Image (cartoon, rainbow, N blue to C red; front, side, top):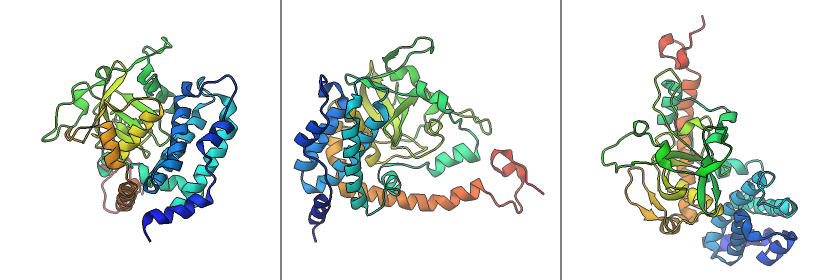
Length: 348
């Protein structure tokens, strides 16, 4: 049976409202929908879900899920998001979750794992060695994280001004966070002057800061893994940003080694927060093969390409599991104390 015919039964089992019904359910008096860019994006995705070709529907549903999840996490602290929309938003969330559970043939409890495999990226073997074997990475405490977060308004990127006493957000200039010593130079790599490193979390929060090369066993380096303690990310790499306008994105993270699907998720996140992507160029690890955002989106938005990434991610997870476990819990027989992670001593 053709794949597109297999999707139709899923559509018949869920209750994702039409755009007209959704806008009626989520209407709040004296508010303007376009003043909330995330809501505006959700409106678009609901319309696309019902009108797009069937082979695109599952990818749209995933984008919709992450957008709703972001809205529900932010609405209490974001004045542009009307709290009166929360009941309708949560009802929509449950409908999308039901559709995705049917898509992945899983329960609600297992769905986050499936989405991690499909759209996330785990710490690579190289990243694990840097962080745990060589003891180079410093992991941020939760209270430190917010100062590295990137916020968006009117299509531009902002960050907190420093020093912290100046409680204002200023346009991001990646040049201010660029550190050439923190980038690993590989043969054939194009220049990356003024690029700054970033990560995108699985709940679509973007963080950026000045990275630092670490000293073995000092835990003083700042890497892509430092923001969220080496957990799974949605995307990682570096960006060129001038006066808050994102110009170029590069997938140059050795800690996570992102693939095209991860960069697609970043573009979807930028669209969600109102950033125009038509003038953003997406580059590969070495800075080559640069294409405009919409072209990259079309080339990588295919569900089957995403599924291939999921299979690769699952294989990577399996291959690295025993490697990581051996180094987290090393066998002590015949191993000298100096060779153990963190310089731990062998108990008698």
